Amino acid sequence: MSFENLADFIQRRMRMSHIYQPVVLMSLLENGGTRHEQDIARDLLSHDQSQIDYYTVIAKNMVGNFEASAQRLAEVLASLVEDTPAEKCRADWVRFEPYRVQLAAGASTTVDVIIENLASEPIDVAIRLIMAPGVTADPPTVCCRVTPGEHYRSSHEIHLSELDRTGPTILCVDVNRNGQPLGWLAECQLWHEGTPC
Image (tube, rainbow, N blue to C red; front, side, top):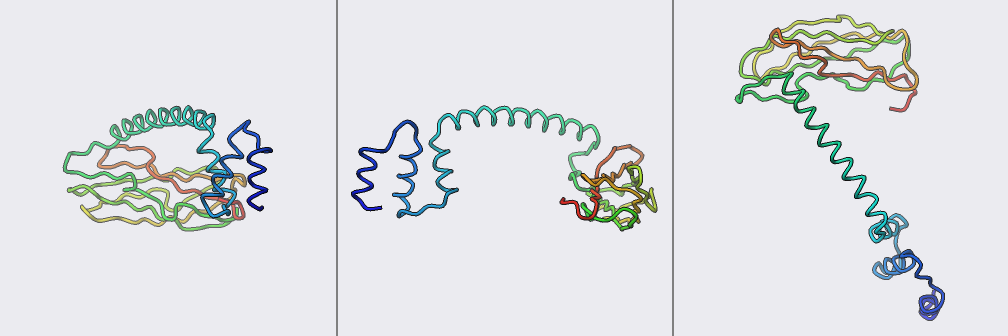
């Protein structure tokens, strides 16, 4: 487009009913006449006050809901694990490896449950795998003692006679630490082979 054509468009044909045309022109002019469509879209959104107002309300609601949920989660976790100030606690001190598995119904796989002792004293841990219908585990339970700074890995053969084809089947581990039940602290997702996950 020539300078004359651009000047004619801006002076006579461009409509100022909304910010689109001026913002697109500014974006192109500031970037040497070329700009990716997504970058222009971002420029448009950054100048559209109605969109900014709309997403401000959504952000306020989400952050408020998130803060309330995070506070509740912190309260629940605090009630599950009573640590002295000298102890460290991480959300993943009990975890599955791998976290996500794809396999066909009728197939078997091995998953490991890893328990880390982040405390300064040995811990006695009992774990029990919680399985959905159609899922079996060998062994389904394990008891162990873990020394400070060390980890324990237990391997479990998982067999699936049936599996949900629309989403994951969840395998959970129920944990008891030093005689205190802590509830479900880790999960593994079992996905039907071919299902996107």
